[in-house]
Each structure stands twice: as structure tokens, then as C-alpha cells.
Length: 572
Image (cartoon, rainbow, N blue to C red; front, side, top):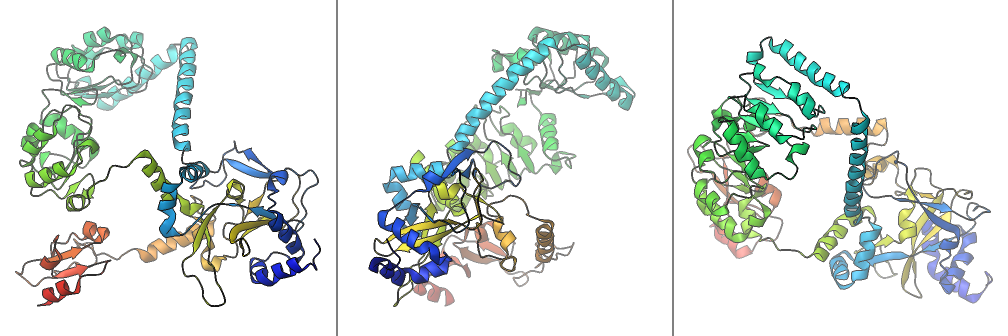
């Protein structure tokens, strides 16, 4: 088709503003017209995908598993051709969820294009790698000499003894990951540490459980014992084993990270100190993490640590939720609790609010917010839709449609097909990609053309932020795709910004920059209402009390429109 043909002239007449706007060289306009007319997608004849097996020099915030290479043997000179790139998905933001719900194949394509299914595949590969590494380690152990681990263990013990200067003063032995075998363990004379209270053998090669029993029963004051990740625990019943060691060690309160039946203040304080090293006594304990500790009720915890304000009781299979409710009233200062997700329903939340008047947060969320916004169980498809909608901003681009009479204020968003999406970023690109709307067919495409000479088997690169300069915070914007600052100048800008944004707070201030009381002396606190979650979450001054009713509030902080009669009633 010649450039002078009427159809081409009409094409240029209609599309000239677009063609000039995106910067497509005029000599390529006839080629574009021809490919649009014939719907020619010939990128597959010029480009190919190659899996990336090397680590990226600049870590990204989204999966990049392929490079796009030029497979044309004669190369591709700059501005010599133009290619149509399809849009895998075009949508208005308000319709995005509905489209994904109505078109399962589109959802599946987006999941694959965004690499959202690679997390599961990665976990499987990780497990396979761990198994393979485990087999290699076993082979190494079979051939390794025993002198080295034995030497390591006894050198370690010697340093401990030299530090304490008296073996009777040693109460804590942490012998983790020292490759201790049955033979080596038998050579350790535990009797020389008569006051030992804590013994950790985590991650060794001890296989004879009877040997362990015979040796630890010589430690009358032993309160905590860890044998996790040793072959001797294989095929052992955890509860039976714990019972056996409790009989052998009359003072045992912690066994394999779990509390025994006879746990006391010592065990809870030990766990609290592991969590917070500033804790010195029971009175210092404000936060207590008892997740996966095998507790069966909270009565003892409440009696020993009544001042705890933050309590985590997740993953305790023998802890019944009804018994938790019965114990909550004993925690007078409890403000936050973490429970299992299976127990996180409206009925239980109401019971929690009734059982503990001081409770404010459940699983790091405000209790009143959870009560006001019941959790809706989602199907796997709905979860995938949420993932796609949350992740699409790293792939999405947009354009707006204008006519002689009006300009569409609502942008049309689109995601390039697999070819366009897999072209990686460079500040010095060799191709350009720009959107194009074909008026006769009302179809949107993207145009791809070389801006530099590209050799055969050379990778294609585009600029994710074409036309955006550093005066428009280019490096800042690139942080959407890349995890690290892109140069020292950018890092310095970040440091300066953080310093300038940091609030100046007096050391004597308790509540932040505004430390003086807002309410008049001896007056009640202001009652405020807000539909803004961050306000609900972070307004903690005693001058304010959150209320769940607009009519009860004297202060409103709203993101939505308020019914005028209600506001008028409040003003009176």
C-alpha cells in the first residue's frame, strides 16, 4: 500500500495527534497502517523469551523470570520497524473486579503474568532443595571425621568454664548446632554442673533418647530442656516423652519449647526475658508471648502476671477458647490479645469484649473495628482476585480518550501482553513502547519500535518512566519496581527527607509534639467519632475517647459525607 493511498491519508488525518504525541517517526507510519489494517502481530518472528538464571544486579519488587531477545539474524536497525503489542487486559478501575470475577481465563492469565503462582512453586522447589541438601549433609556426615565436632564442643565448654571460673555457677548451657553425636554427648560430664537449670541441645545429631534420659536425670535442678531437631525425637510421642522427662527431672518447667504441667513464675519470666531483655521481675512484664507453648488454661498465667497488657496465646491446641474467656477478667490491664484465626468470629469477638472491659485490640486490629466489619470468608478465586488487584500497579499503564468536544476524566488502564511485560527496564533503552488507540476498530494497542541498533540475540530494554526526569522525582518513582536506592545521590535524598520529616519531640513529651492537655482541667475527655481506620488506630491520647455513634461525639474526623441533620443536632 502506497503512502499516497486514500485510506492511508485518512489514517494519518485521524491519528496524526497520537502519532506525533507518542513520537513514532513518520517513516514508520505506513508500516503501522499496514499492520493495523491486516492485524499483523509479527513480534513472535523477531523476538523470543529466554529464562533468566542469574541473580539480578538490582533486586525488583515483582517477578522477572525472562529476558526478551532479538532472534532476527540480521539484527534490527534503529527506527526500521514498528510492532503491535497486544493489551492483555484493558479496564476502567471501577470495573476491574467485576471483569476478573466474570472471566476466569483472564484471571488465570493475570495470575501467571504477574508471577503470583510462583510463590507456591517456589515453596515446593525450596522443599525439594532442602531435601537434597539434607541428603548431601547425611553423605558428608558419613565420611566426616569425628575429631572436628568433638573438638568444637569441648572448646566451647572450656570457654564457658573459663568465663564462670566455677562450674557450680554455670546454670545455662546452650549447646545448639554443634554436631553433637551420641558418643560425644556421653563424654560430656553433666554432673560437674550440679546447679544447671537450662540445657539446650537444639539441632544436633543425638539419636539415642535413652542416653539423654540417663544423663539428664543427674541434673536435679534442671528447669528447661531443648532437644528439638535431633534424630532421637523421630517417631516419639511428644506428650509421652514430656511426661517421661518430667518424672526424671522434678523441677522441669520447659521441655522442647513447651510449658510442662508444673510450670511456675520462673518459666514465664524466662520466656518474657527472652522476648524483652529489659525485664527484670514480674512487675516489669507487660508483654507475654505464649504462642506454641502447650498451655491448657490461663488461670495460672493470670494469677502470676496480672499486669500483662499484651498477650499472645496462638497455636496452643489444648487451650479451649471458653477457658480463655473465663480467665480474661483476671487480667486487669489486658489491652491486646492474639488468638487463633479459627476463633476469630463475631460471636467470639463479642464474648471477648464482654469478658474483658479493658481489651482494645485483637490480633493487632482494633476490637471495635472487627465488630463493626465482620470478616467474610473468601474463596480461593476471590483471594487470587485480591492478589491481582493489589499487584497490578507494578504492571499497569493508562491512557485517556479525548474528542474535539470533551476529555475523558476517567483513565483506561491496561496491562501489556507477555511480550511487552517481559521487556525489562533500562535508563538507556533500545526500544520504545507507547499506547495507541485505533479509531476505526475502537481497539487499543501499544506500539514497539527500536530506538537504537539492536544486534541478534541482544536483549530488549525499555524505559518504565519514559519522559520522566529527575526534576520529577524519577529515582523516587522507580522505587515502585526496584527494592534499593539506585544511586548514592538518591540515598542521600532519602536521608535528607527523613531528617526533614522527622518530628521534633521534647524528651519530656509523653504523647508526641503536642504534649499539653487539650481538654480544660478537671473536664471529661472529648468523645470523637471517625470512619478513618488510621485515626481510630493511632489517636490514643487520654483527652479523647472513641465512640461508635456520631450522635455521641463532640469531634468528627470523617472521610465520608455526614448526614446533615445529625450534625445539626450535635451542634445544639
